[in-house]
Image (cartoon, rainbow, N blue to C red):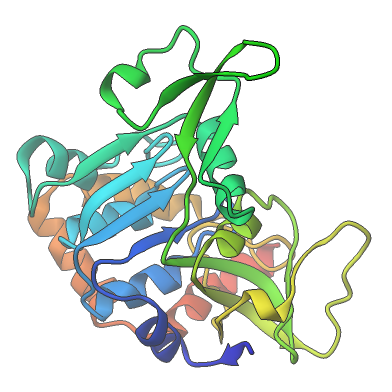
Length: 284
């Protein structure tokens, strides 16, 4: 059964050194608070998976927690580079990071294959692209029925998936609204899962075709209002564009980065996310 835990305990029980971990959210509902708790707990040797790594993965890489990144597109959305990731790849600071790059289509299909218990994903893609030359996990196969050449990639099956959502009910069912991305498939593909939510309610009030994760798919739920900040949570608060702009300056310098992380993550608690989103909620 789903456990309702503090953020600290949810991460402590489910995210372990050496894990293959997916912190998913496609511009929306990005689990920043959960990622920061992983940083505070000092996890190491992680293989991180994400369709669009942005500043939370930049922070985790910069803190020396990551040994490999499996991804499709990495950047500070609407701003530019992930400077801590680039420093790790080019200069091995604070440690080297292996990268495995895919297309969005490959990642989405790989998550779906993992959720279905399949060993790989087969799809049309990569024709005319050179990623296969640098990524040995991109293969070509021929359809046994038509002979058509198709792309194949390994299924994604994380040790743990971490997502943020709007709300859960008291039974542990989780509602995700708005831009869903690949969160559902990530949870279904993973051995364990942690969901942070804005609130717990008696009734999810889910509309037709809403994305609902039933309680048996979720290992732990932590109530963390503002847990997606600086990304947004539809119906609760908007995207904090100023923080993304600020990050470009902060992350460009190693000492500035370390000072920012100490002040805003290492020395901060989960309640800081709610404080940061109060003005965003009032404007929503």
